[in-house]
Length: 386
Ligand SMILES: C[S@@+](CC[C@H](N)C(=O)[O-])C[C@H]1O[C@@H](n2cnc3c(N)ncnc32)[C@H](O)[C@@H]1O
Image 1 (cartoon, rainbow, N blue to C red):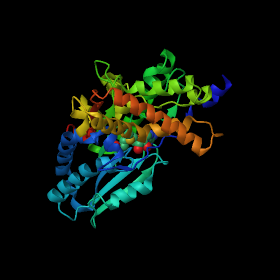
Image 2: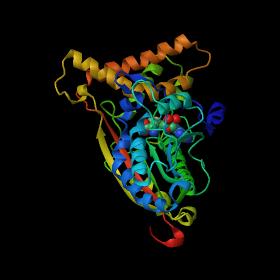
Image 3: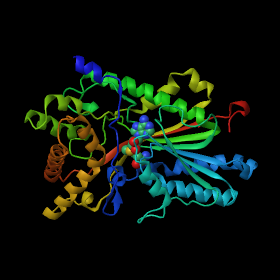
Image 4: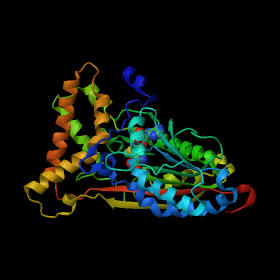
């Protein structure tokens, strides 16, 4: 019990996404197919709405855009380049543009820097004399930029990560495997975090500005992201098996938790507005639209119905790639510090071998993600609707 209390409410230092290229695509593409592009239409529409007001200030005021929880920046790169192109076409090449990239301080900002600068497989951000990339290593659950500084904020598949770890999941790894109390604690933290996220972004936005987010979620049929047959939570069952078989200790089993609330539904995203929070109202924030989506992941092996041996192998490798980058840190974070690095790698590889062989045996499953797009505007309170 005492150990459990020490664990409660600690910040979550182990949260880290590994990013490397998997053949032709990067890790985040394997995880969700750069899902932020599913919001391309509202993002571009919102940008087009703010540009006319910007044209009155012209070049002395930069257009300011931010991506929260950006990881290595690859997932938003093409969208941000498209926005730069639109801004420069409409307002001219002299128009100053500031692009802020946010992630938690432990993120690999060196990698982000090389992606922005351009690398072997991509020419990077379209940086010119008047385009300024800036990095913000800070939790997105607090204000990250001065009041009324941003025109447009985006965030892809990041808001499910909770700001602190509020419980250990005793019989599993994922929130969906938690008991009622564990689920309640994570849900409450998720509610507070979403409020903080919305309010912080609201403070940063200029009047008339927009926040467009794509969030891991559940849908009205209680469906959740499903990289493997039986859904995301089933990825926890292999850890449970490893604990039962004595490959990891009971203490390690308790410490291996995915600290994410990916079970939010439409009503949870609406909550800061439906509860009429004074701060949300005072900032003039308005929920413009919300859309839940089921998006099938893209890989040639995923679409093949009757797979041969080679295709099953290819399929199972790709499923592991869609899980490894975000799940490895969850497992490593829970393993005892007394273990050698080699021991940890053997356990990690053992886990992913299990995922791979399960995927191989269930290769009929077509993996998908469930996400909810949320569009929020900060209304121009002084001058009425924009
Ligand atoms: C699944 S990745 C998504 C990355 C990228 N936005 C995309 O669309 O692929 C989630 C990102 O959220 C970041 N993240 C988690 N908690 C955060 C926090 N409190 N503040 C800022 N970023 C956070 C993680 O470090 C990670 O880079």
